[in-house]
Length: 92
Image (cartoon, rainbow, N blue to C red; front, top):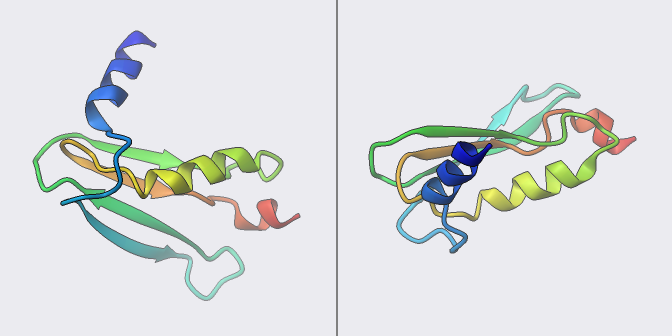
């Protein structure tokens, strides 16, 4: 757990996206499962972190938190976010 916390501290900054490039994408386009995500690229080679939110429809806080990560600015590497993995579950 300590390694995970240290990694997250090194990988992410809570500052708004500065020089980082943000790319938005859509998954399952045109279906009832359509959802979107983002890739925040620091422009510096490094690890890639995948953040998934909204997996369980009765837990919307994870989706809300994951959406905020798209505004983070990684120090190095990339962040890939799919905030609403289960959009139908979140609607119910």
